[in-house]
Image 1 (cartoon, rainbow, N blue to C red):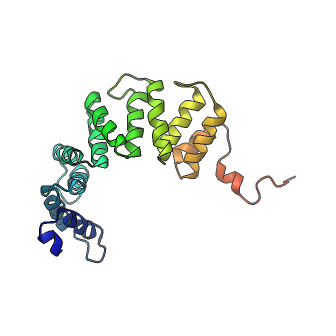
Image 2 (image 1 turned 30 degrees about the vertical axis):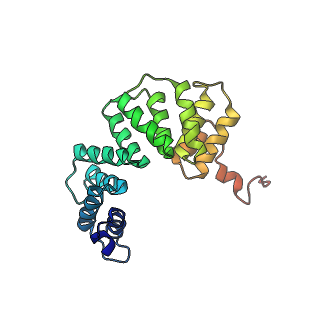
Image 3 (image 1 turned 45 degrees about the horizontal axis):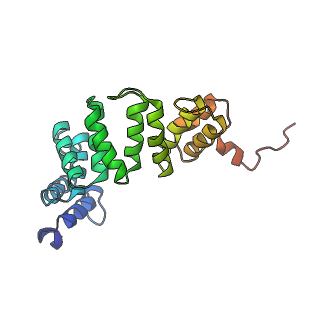
Length: 212
């Protein structure tokens, strides 16, 4: 608390996190919002991003998407990859493809795998950019390689169906299994839709037992 009062923006953001979830102190979301604002005023990118999430979701503060986007843009400007992803995601919803792609590319290059996946979605679904499965593939692959299970699922779907790439059902199945094992329900549903067993079933002790 002294560090925040002494002008450390990072300390203000950290203190806000404690009040937001009630770690070591009684939960006080309103105080958290004030501390996030203080952190953002001090050019702490996470403070701007976290306050932006509160305005986006209408938690404690009135929902204000315009203000949320301004806070995400500030976080992105200050170097927050998740902030750039939040901004890009919002720009996608507004149909601003070029602006969304710029923000998401910056976020992906900054190490946010969700942003890589969202870039893939921009192309695969034709959301604010012309639909282009081939262009979507490397983004989904990068997201999956970085541990984003939705990226793995999307890559698996395209590979299974031969969208933008030659059909490779074995590879597609393996990718869908990665997503399913990580708890991705749509990934499990995609496996069922193809008539493939869920990977969890093959891990059961009685799997493959003679049931005659």
